Image (cartoon, one colour):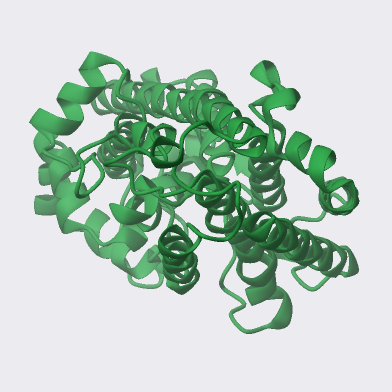
Length: 421
């Protein structure tokens, strides 16, 4: 299961910074109370505007679109299969697999900003817990009454989201249905009985009918939670998404205490109502609760748990064998956060890296080098052609783990410097 203790510590750290940084220097503090913003504060404000509008908003918009499309495709495949199993084609299965990986990429590229809605509303563990509870899945798929409940439109989605444990939900439950041994599932295997030992050892027979019913319901819940992320951050999210989240699902989506979206709460930093007392708090939140959080998780948990043998089963994306790709997308989320936007709409002039290059070029150089070393190490893991699940203790795995740990260290050094300078 995905570990959550680190998230709690970084969120607590961010809150401590919010309360305690108001007197760190003569150019810190509440611009509204102390007159004109200083040069550094003005740059931090511009960095925040760029970050919210060109990192968070487009990433969550892509994720919302892609998970919506994934759900629609799975529902269509389910209905075709139920009517006539022979009518579902391999091309259609392959298209669903491709859409899954596209949505998965957007999610992994959002993990440098798990602070806020993803953590506060429990969305991260709800949609991205591993390892999958295969024994629980056998119970669900082998029970005709539970299958009937899952195969009931919005009621089925609600049943999945509210009654099934998080070890059966989200990306990894769907991944098990769509991928095996690093390859797209064959339509022939969907037409036959499930052959995974978790099923056969218990004499439970299920086919693609039950599996697609389950995958479609879980994909609906995944879509709803990703729409919740989009709506929670962006008050200008599509109206249909807001209606689904707020009215139909009745999911929370605003900041406790001020009813702002998380985007507005950050953009309104230093103003009455925002939980961010200073612009420095925003910068350190991005660096610590955001970027450092995921760097530490990738190095110490996503890689470290299996590499060290502490938990050999703690392998993300074992069925698609995309672990290294997941890790690289996590580092891309850090890159986007540091450089002022996703690649297609980046403005490095209004970025944390530009701030460091201007005011602390030595730290900027060290951070850039650590980021590049992390990419180089992960590219080597991918180029090896050996999936993480097949060789979690390979030498190239250790190189990547250490490089990302070094990146985490540099991120914290940058945050520490910004907090007091």
